[in-house]
Each structure stands twice: as C-alpha cells, then as structure tokens.
Length: 208
Image 1 (spheres, rainbow, N blue to C red):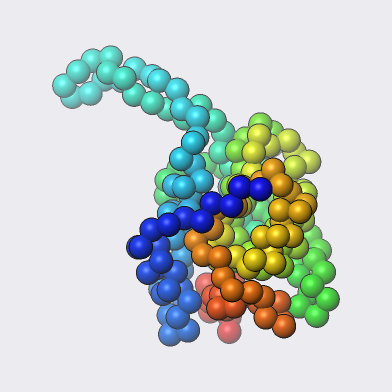
Image 2: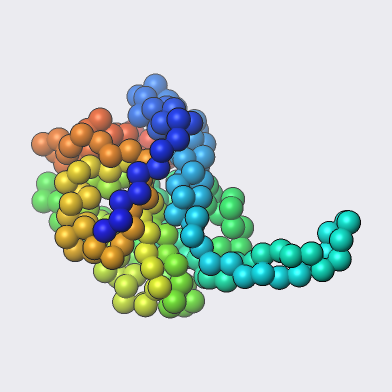
C-alpha cells in the first residue's frame, strides 16, 4: 500500500490547530476544510487530463487542459462530512457518495447503516474521506463496499492516522493509497488515536 505522508509546514500548523482542545467547532470546521484541500491536491496530483483548444483574450486555439478521469468522493458519516467542502472547492461538479458506518466503542465492531454511491462510480477514481484512521475497521468496511462497484482506484484521505490502523488497512487493501497529514504515535487503550484530534465528529458538530 502506498502511504503518502504530505509534507508542508502550513499543513503542520493547521493540524496543530485541529489538535488544540481550545479550538471551537466553527474554527475546527473551517480548518478541517482547508486541510482537506491540501490532501486532495496531493491525492489528485497524477489525475489524467487531456489537451483541448481554448480561446484566451490574447490568442485563439491556445492549448488548455480538461479532466480525462472521473473523480468521486465518498465521505464516511459523520466526521467525513467535514471534509467535503474542502474537496468540492477544487471540483464543484464532483459527485459525492455517502456511507454511514457505526463503530461500537465497546466491541470495536462496525455495521453499515447507510449506503448511497453514484452509479457512475464504475471506472472512477474514488477518494474516501475520513479525518481519522484509527483501528481501520470503518475504512476497510467502506472500501469493501466501494470495490463492489468497480472503481479504477481508491485513495483514503485522513488528517491523522495511527500506525495500527495503517498496518491493518494495508493487510486487507494493499492496492489502496493513503494520503495522510500526520502519522501519530499509537492507539490508546480505548482505541483513540494519540495525540489525535479527539472525537472529530463531536468537534465538527459541537455535540460534546
């Protein structure tokens, strides 16, 4: 599995703001969107384009480019929703699928309760959005579901990831790319990433 740890000092600063317990929900949402744009740029740096002819104010039939590959994003409920605007700011026309998965904090078992993927996902490049890759179970189950629709490739975009989750994801889906802002120290005894972000869903929506 390709693990792409994005290196940029501005990204490091923004992730530090996300980690800070003093960052309020509105600021957390805004910064998460900005970080998501960083990650999307990196995930799409090799996207296929084709040459087209355009007219500029100065020259007719100048060389331009347009996308030659379908791209679909799939946020995982609920924290993944906080990353959507950061990616759609790059591609307003991009299609968005949704997967809802619940993880039981006591057993760490997951169950899918919502699945709505675009019909055009076949042959598309799919970006799975989830701010945190912790145990890996949620993302693995989501990828299992997405692969049934036949995408051309899958990249997971996460702000922070635990080594345990990366190892587990790689063991099940070695063909997937992980684009991540920070690889953190470990999972704690409760299965949370340390130092992590806390509960990203709660911090996005102000529910705790």
